[in-house]
Image (cartoon, rainbow over all chains, first blue to last red; front, side):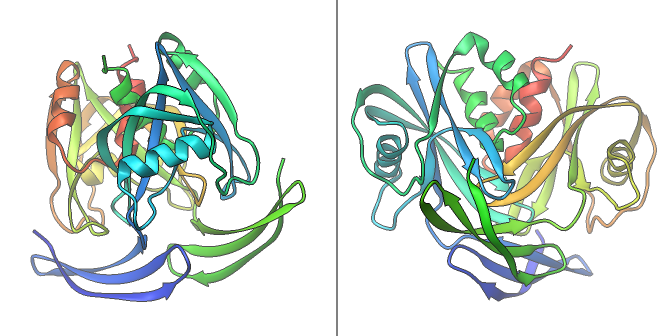
Length: 173
Length: 173
């Protein structure tokens, strides 16, 4: 196992902590840059209604365009992952769920960023809204499980975490 | 469509450019932080040998552990995506391919990071090695397509881009 010899923060923002580290592999030492989050991670929730799932379209500032994704957001300091998931569902698509299940913890690109997301499935949805920090109403798109592949083919900008969630949903009963 | 009013770099490293932006949605203005890459993006290559695909295990410094991923790396300034893919294959797993195909461009988490990765499939593999910047030999794991789901269940740390690649491979003939 390689060994991290020095790790230091070189810049902090509200959301990110940029770090440098030296890593020792045998007798080689390499320098790395790391982006670190400062919270408890994020949840991404697949809302399931029978054989349909609900995607959203959300503005993604880093690429200045709309992306296909699922309801998601950071976990607040006092929240469990299930509470965060139910809050985001109500804020982003106007549903709450009495049946939310954790599926898998996924890592974005752990070679340089430590961000992780808990994939959750939400069933037994009932209308319920909370006001969140969304700056505009999100477009909701219901897609039948059998049509997901064709739907993805047509979408140009897809949050990579959508694929992780779908990998489990397509094998889920 | 929302409008980016101000975008400025607040910190630059060798790999990252941390930016701030104000975004106008109707009459609301929100502040965002963005991580920007400084290159041509990355390739991630699925090596295919008959009904088997080759995964790798690679040390991921951001989480100080090994992750399951595919051969991947940044595209050099003078390279095409196909050239970058063939170089990474030779550096990371000791194969080259005469049949590399582009599958999909994916976005990591475009709400805050503009990084993208070109998913490539590589077939017709022949042994060929190049010395890259890998600090240690990478473990290669061949998995039959039919066993991928069971294999993923057992892995704890998986690069999210693996799922995007698999979404296409499992529907690929």
